[in-house]
Length: 261
Length: 370
Image 1 (cartoon, one colour):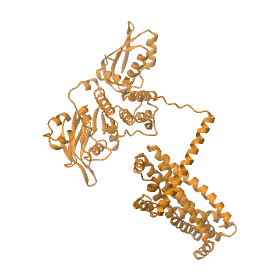
Image 2 (cartoon, chains in turn blue, orange):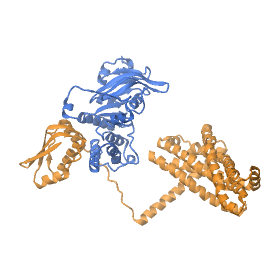
Image 3 (spheres, chains in turn cyan, purple):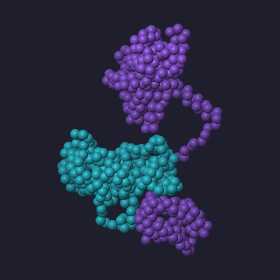
Image 4 (cartoon, helix red, strand yellow):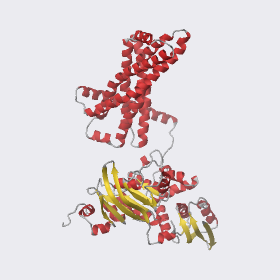
């Protein structure tokens, strides 16, 4: 990232999904979804259970191909890319999984050092320093030699975030980051995401249905609907709450509160 | 990347110029701070007007500089850095929670010996309690009072019967073949190659069929039991069963043990037949024994007591394999690694206990003259 880039107001498009359909065999979860994620956005993919949020994230991260449509990441067609190019694109993307997905046989330091050892040319000393920095950034300074089984769920998520940040990604995907966390840990994680977004300029794509997080951190969003299998709302979550495009979005954002109540 | 420093009035100005991407050769912050201390400099400021692109390698340098500077009472002024860089370093310097230090001190020899002994005693008592639990569940099963689903039993039976036929047939055929080859080398020297038929028949029926079956099923089915139940432990399914008041030995262990005890004798009979066929393949094609002659000698060598001894071994092995698989699965830890460890332990301990049981049973049969 450059100083100029940080200061520029016009945002470039980081992810462009065109007519994406997500399906498992004949079972279609999502049809013709098109959206754009701009640079430095905290983009929320929201919707009720079973609407295909996590499956859409799997498509965006290349873990499963979309049934139809295309995904462009930083201007490169990700769906049509060969495995080598796809791997190169993914090196610029970090992923925070729901449970942290830390390797249980490795210490936190080894977990974070793994992508650095694999894809960077840093010396061992530099990698160790980078690992300490990443852990310090997520508030886990000094936990280098701990195993995932020795830390709490919230700390596992933060350690997962440190690993996702290891290679200074342009885009960071998060699958339900607040799930299973107490309100204070959840708020701390939200604050951390906002801080990293502002200081590092990282674009975040977050799958969640936690309303508090959606309104606190989201700068842009899409709402997926399980019934129609389509995107039923797009835009800033606060704006969607003020002007809901339909009942599904209103009910979701107000936890089913009656409009006239 | 360019890094310059100018000193005046106990203050150093660090000028950052150009790009700072994947920089591996940054000056050591520790040496830098030591140098400042030596020169009695107590303030560091930055000039970053010409700083270009940067990544974590710059953040690392500045982070350690700020950390070590703070510890050495040197004022590291980050305010002249770009705002996002300053915020990032401040974020890293903020400590949310200090870890408790890990005590890895080694115990003295006697204490360590005592601790290991206690661990062994506890593990032995746990195993005894487990076997006791199985026996109680088995009594309930016989009285049709065990809480288990028929479908689980049928699924376990299906898994360890016809799905295992392929591998059992192949391995047993090869064992019969090898047994005949090894025997033929010695017997041929005396012109007694015809006794290969007797050797293979007695060997397979009495022990080899059951032993090979035990080893195959320990690796195939015992490992699968440990992995399945271990994963249930990781997913808290076993906790759910316990809190529902369902005995896990009824629900998880009995269907697996009974199905394997039922399946093992049939698989052993199959192994015996395939082993004899493997021996016949060598006898007929390589040693030139006629099929009728081979069958005659095999039939003469076959004895009912050998056959039943083999079947008895297989039933014991079935119990050992299923019990080890279930025991290590139930006592599995809560992470992915633990499932692997449980699976390995299930297979290794099943094989060890099978060998121990074979030794004990062989002595008993010898004494009884069977």
